[in-house]
Length: 345
Ligand SMILES: Cc1ncc(COP(=O)(O)O)c(C=O)c1O
Image (cartoon, rainbow, N blue to C red):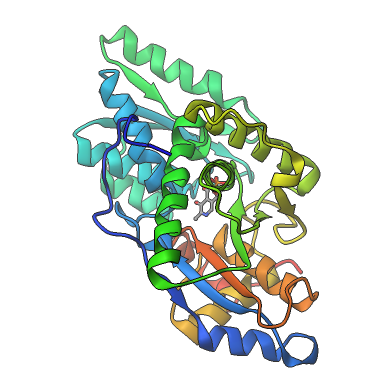
């Protein structure tokens, strides 16, 4: 599959490592039935470029190249108040000499705090041009179009990036990741039984599904929901994977059998801390010194841990966890993660 026909900017000058996690795997096995669990490895997409990078970096390589090809001078995007996607989009804009504006959706009432820590602080440090805050549930596309119209009235040109950078162009970033992993599997002589990824706006999961199908990579992908259970999440992922496959001209139909979604680990609500997340963040920090974030990767790793304890993996099965980044919001939830503030079950 040839991605070179799509314009792309490069924000990471290396391949992110795939590493074993022996101490984490041993600690996890000790808490699994019979004291046996999977052998867990990690793909370090938390080390991607930009400030600090994560899965959005890969999507933005294609999205920003498209924006530049269209002559845009401003990137417009949307997200929750602690959005990694907004921060990384802003970082890409800074690097390219573009302006950047956000529409922030207060999914938890009162959660936007201009002087807050984590990503709020980063937004201001990197110099976001303007932020419009709207209540949870507001339609985001018209709100971003309004920002684009205001810019157009001033003779400027905005480029709208959907939430999470998840459309066909953004999904190409995770097709590129699929190809990168395929090469690493070959070079390192690795054979995995399962890949565990986060599933939110679905560009990561959907892009990987399209990339694995298109490159005939025969490793089942398990998507852990960060905001929806499977009945709501699976159709989104199928739609995203199909859009990416169509853009690539793969000529295939993505079916429900291609998309495995797991729920039950994100509750009570998107971004609200829970006890399983706290356990996962502490366990990885204290066994491998790798930070997870409370909103996404902490809950995704909680899913991997939960599946292992429920016996979903064969003993000794080799499982690859995709670390998609998100470090700054860890600082915004420091007390919860240290067990010094109450969290949901
Ligand atoms: C750190 C992190 N992990 C995972 C996700 C989920 O990825 P996606 O939106 O592509 O489903 C996000 C989305 O914002 C994220 O910031």
